[in-house]
Amino acid sequence: MSPTDEAKEKAKEKARMLATLAANMQYGTAIRRGKSGKIYTFKIGVKTQVDADDFKAFTDAKGEHYEKYLTEFKEEPAQ
Image 1 (spheres, rainbow, N blue to C red):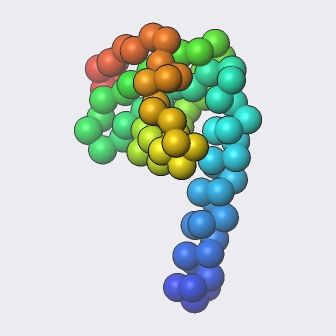
Image 2 (image 1 turned 30 degrees about the horizontal axis):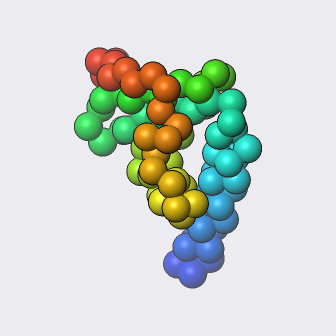
Image 3 (image 1 turned 90 degrees about the horizontal axis):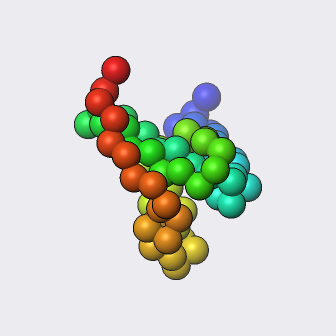
């Protein structure tokens, strides 16, 4: 796979993930920030795991602030 194909595949994967996030937005989202090991949970009903940076990028793209979706904030210890 060439680097160009790899970049296209990553872009497709991100688009799929953001589409899934959009579909799940009204039901609820649990967000996990991987690098720091901390888990941030945003609950709006049902839980879905999404990377925090991607969630922020998604809400920024919609011109909304992520806190609009925040009904419960909980930081859990890394496992």
